[in-house]
Length: 447
Image (cartoon, rainbow, N blue to C red; front, side):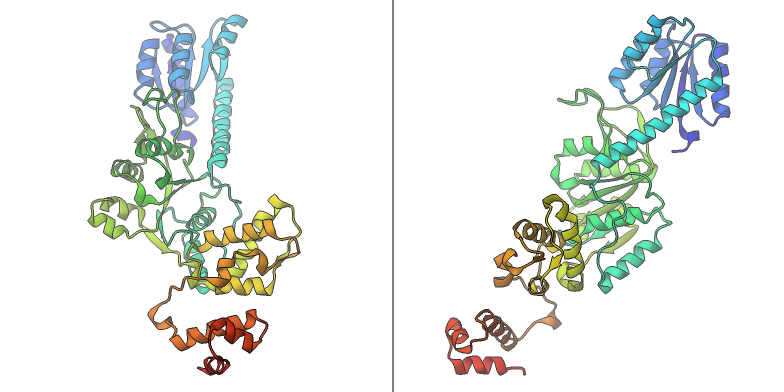
């Protein structure tokens, strides 16, 4: 947010002082509202959103300390600077103990107040970025687009062509294909890369909790809401919000998301003040959204707002050339946790991984690699530390033009058994339950 969008409420019973302050702050680019009574100030605070309040301690109606206490109780993220005409230690201590961010004494220098306001704005920005870091996916900000297959190179080219755009993007793909990694890459390639990247899986929350996570809530909004909470929309301001499994979002929340996208504003749960944000939305789904729309389970208007650009992430079985580079990436990612001197994968291990169909996609590969790291005691990941199911079972998902004939499947399986028994054809035939002649015929097929 720019300085000009920062809104400041000035409360001072001396009209000349209040108006002079407003004029000076407006010259600095701030948006100001002025009132001269504590009760009026409290009413305004409950109706409008402010970044900072500058209030005198001595006010008609509600005094400044009472106002401060009520503000910090209901709006704990709202910063307050107190003004006092009495430079007593007692009044300053009382204000600071009740949550004032800073204070200034009359007669005061306006430049000093402006310095204090700018300091608060700068600190709020740092706190928001720190909070964003804590609730983000925890991935390295320099994370590359992982994959050297033709399809992933095309996706990377598309993403880089959008680096000056703030358009919303919908990622489509099976579970575990790396939609989260792709969303992070999109953010890091955009003009928002120095601002928060926040991710949330919409499928893991109840409707009430999801609304609270996304939009925040006011104190007392529901049972257990003992304090005001900022939502991820606020934390992601100026950055990117990644909504994974967007199709699991309840219809009521879909309406609120649409309002954020179209107007950049929303209400916290239980709130009456309109919150303003500038957030780019990247969403992801593994479902047929058009079918959900036809079943009235997903809003058509929201779909078109989310789907300014659609990117389809292919399953890992359709981009097997990415398996070696992904395997090495996950090896380097998890090695520090286990403090082992593993440098890579044996050829036999890579062959097994390349031959597997990965129904769980990239996520399954990562789990396999981490498991192998835990078990491995040599410098290379060996087949013995890969799951046995990789060598004995795989799920084939082929296009029509890739379906193998029975002869090809029989030959492939016979060759694997032959390799397992060290090339002994007599032993291989016994294992297969066929004669040595039949094995010879199978192996000769399609030669």
